[in-house]
Image (spheres, helix red, strand yellow):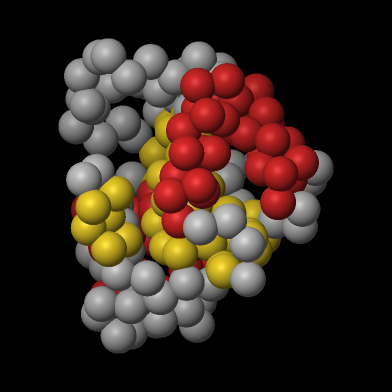
Length: 164
């Protein structure tokens, strides 16, 4: 069984879409480890603030199946892929880590580069998996978060009941 970590984000109907995504993931994978929900400014474009969180789950599905499944969930919630790369999103689910797998195949890259670049990915991940070792860098998510320039990106936890 593989341990998988995902990043979820939304800035369109964000509460409804995050709750719906968590419900779908729970239906498919059972028990989820869920970080707090954080609010962050949009990155790379002018837009409404995002809700972001990290989710851990266990699965027997292979990495390509997981990737297909999260794209299907995004589509269920009205994800539009034809617009600019940096734009508002009903739902964005990114596969961050699949066990210790290191892969670069088309658009699929593991571990996901955003882990070390965006506070809205790293802080929630470090919250639910502080001792998890980054498979390329060889240091824990907690250490990565401590080394991150936390003043460089505005991010704060919000009151959000993510129970399923």
